[in-house]
Image (cartoon, rainbow, N blue to C red):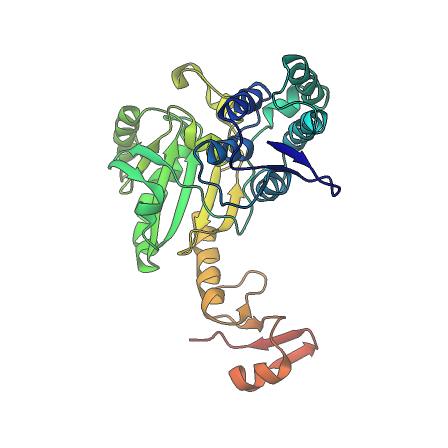
Length: 338
């Protein structure tokens, strides 16, 4: 049952009719409203919603802020959903096909071809790294299980047998002991089949002197790339028919903390090799600042002085650090904590 409150919030009761939920999910599919709305409807259908009302609008808004911040077309779709709800309020239980068409038109009017290409889930710092299951060069994994409470680096490639990526994979294999020393796991991804990854590894060893000594995900169905916002949700087809330029946005580095939260996102163009020494430097900073109330200044390296975090009061700073240099009241410099 859909009910309208004076506040304008539309709520779906757990006891709604199965026929309505099926039609609602059909509408969501037609309007290409993907994760938040589909999940809400699925929860209602499977009767896993708490006994109180589930506020669809509020819940979808929360999900959109967390996962779709940079997708204006999603908000247009959400607006279409709300328009449909308003039309249904107190008058009919089932959405009519003409209303579905109208809502779809609202979505279409707010987007163009370029917007559709950008209709991807956008992850931000502090978001939980999405879980997934995938085949890798070291077997099938569940990502969160593979993380197992560790720091990790996930870095992606648009296609196998690309020159810049070949040098990156080899260099990262060569400096992997530095990541091991920091208790950081490494996992790669390329938009090709795992079997091609293994052939590529031979080339990497021949040209770079070392083969990848960490798992590389075979994202031949684009699932992980879409989940992490590196490819549009509409991407389909055979990866063998796509060129590296088609997948050029799959050039990310994600640093993930033990809490599964994303701590760093770097995106590189295809023509610029990644600086994994810089990734190590950032990991050193992230690990230091996770354990101490400090921040690291520009070009900081291990052993350099640090800055007392702005949230620490002077009285608390005296208890923790004793004394400090203070060129300005907001810049309090201390030696790096051990």
